[in-house]
Structures are given as C-alpha cells and as structure tokens.
Image (cartoon, rainbow, N blue to C red; front, side, top):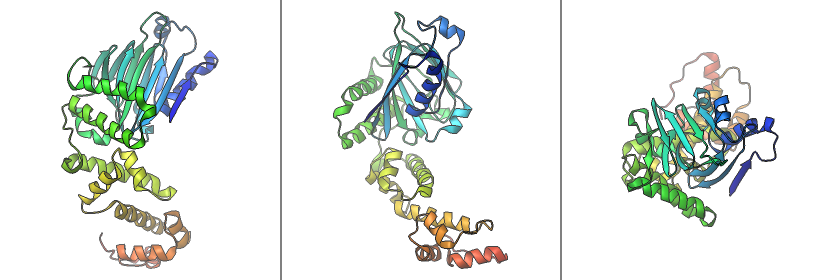
Amino acid sequence: MTSYWTTRGLGPADQMSYWADVLCQAFTPLAPWRSRDHVERSFSSSGLPGWVRSAAIGGGNAAEIASCTQRIDHGKREVARADEDVVFVNLQLDGQCTTTQDGRQCTVSRGEFAIVDSTRPYRLEFVEPGNDELWRVLSFRLPRPLLADVVGPSAATTARRFSSSSGSARLLSSLMVETWQTDSSLQPTERQMVGAAHVDLLRAVLGGTAERGAGSSVQTDEVLRVSAVRYIDSRLPFGRVPATEAARHVGVSVRTLHALFERAGTTFGAVVREHRVEACRRELADSRDDRSIGAIAAAWGFSDSAHLAKTFRLRFGCSPVEYRASVRTGEVLQLAQG
C-alpha cells in the first residue's frame, strides 16, 4: 500500500507545520526549516511546496520525496523521539543535498547517494536544481540491527558520497530505482526478499559481509535478538506479540527469527513468557500497586491468575501470593534463578 502526502492546497502559513508532520510520519522525527538564504535561493518565496510518496518494502520502507531549498535536522531531541533504529540510503534524483553526520560532510548530486543513521544526529541541506524545479530524493529505510556493525560511529560510513557509476554502489542504486518503479506488482514474499537484497547490497557497499541466516556472525545475531527483545517489551502491554510482527519489525523472516533465539539456547515464545512473568513480578513488588493478582495477570497477557501462578512458580519457585506477601512483610525469599 502506497501513502501520499502533499502541501498543495494548503495556505503558505500552514505548509511548514504540515510538512514537519509529514516528514516525521514518513521517515523518522525530523525538523525542517527555511532561512532567509534558503528562500532567496529558491523559486518558492513563500510557503513550502513538497510531496512524499511512501511504501513498505520487506522489513523497511521506500519513499520518494520532493520539495524546495531547505534544511532538515535530526537533532538530539529527534533522536530521543525516534521509536525505531534505522538507516536511510538517500539517492539523489534531482538537485543536491549536503549531508552532515559524525563530524563528516558530503554533497551528493543526481545519481549519487549517502547514508545516515537515525541513532545519532544528522543534518540534510537540500538545494533545488534550478529552472523552478523541486529537488527529489529516493530514500530507502532499512533496519539498523542488520547493519549495526557497518554503520556505527567508528565505521566512518555515514555522510560519505557514493557514486552510482560502478561496482556494488551501482547495483544498489539500480535496485532501489527498479524496486520503486515495480513496487505495486510485488507480492509480500517478494517484498521481503527484495528488502533483504537491499540490506545485503548496502553491506557490500560499506565493506561488510553480506551473509546472513545460518552463517550469521555472532555480532549480527546479537543485535537482531536485542532488536526483537526490545520489540517484545514495547508490545507486551498491548497483548499478544506474534512472531510474524516481531520478524517484520526486525527485518527477517519468521524462520530466521526463531533460528536467532534457538542459536542462543532459547525460543522466541520462551523469551515472551519470561518477560511477561518478570513484568508481573515487578508489579507485585510495588507496594503502591493494590490491584488483584488476577488483574495484574490479565494486564500482562495471562489468561487468569491460575495461569500466572503456574508460570510464576516454575520461574521463581514460589507463588505470586507468597512473593507479594514476602515483599510487604519485608521477608526475603530466595527466588529461583532463570
């Protein structure tokens, strides 16, 4: 499904605030602004013309964006607001963009691209191509856990100019354009495979290994598991945590997700249960929480208090009633270690 936003039809006074909302929804928390210099160098002397078209690709997202001369910041405040860690590959289609991150700066023109990492501040300065035209960028958002070892601060891969004229960079930019042009005809399984292909090619561009699955490195396995566990924790208060949704969030297949946990000597389901019962233990230990054990059990996805009691005893060696009583009387219980 493709989403589309445009500032067309809005008054000049409303376009900037709407544009900021669009950028945050389509990409990651971002703060656009236009200085007097931006306006003087732009064909648009008032308001902010712009549009974004976006579609999900595998575990990531693709978007084409066009607008006028401006600066877009992803500062410390925006980093703190981001709800997922991602990497953006920004392929310039028209105009220019100066990208600044990690103490480096590069300027890309048509047919070139740069990457940025959402876990750290960055700045994008866009300039129109002239002739009263908007700049345009094709931006692919990829799961950072799959690229953590090649995009960290010490990797020196962000804010670098990559030419699409040869090698793996040419393959990546060609795949981005071809994927965007044929997106509507891709089936869900094809989208997943195409998304994985973008990750593999970017790893090749940045000098990382493109192998995953059974041959994954210990480091890559770990960052993927951490991402999955973070997703589990974020979804537990809202009920079930299907493996399909966790896999989609991490950017891998369900089979690969299960294999990640099996290689660590556990299972996806066991981790979900462990985090559910641990959440209940924390709330039972809170003397200010006067809810019934049944209410706490229901809040964390257990069918009833008996279900929680059985799981709790298996995990900690005592019942929820015994544990809560010990906390409130100051008695120290020796809990079983998981």
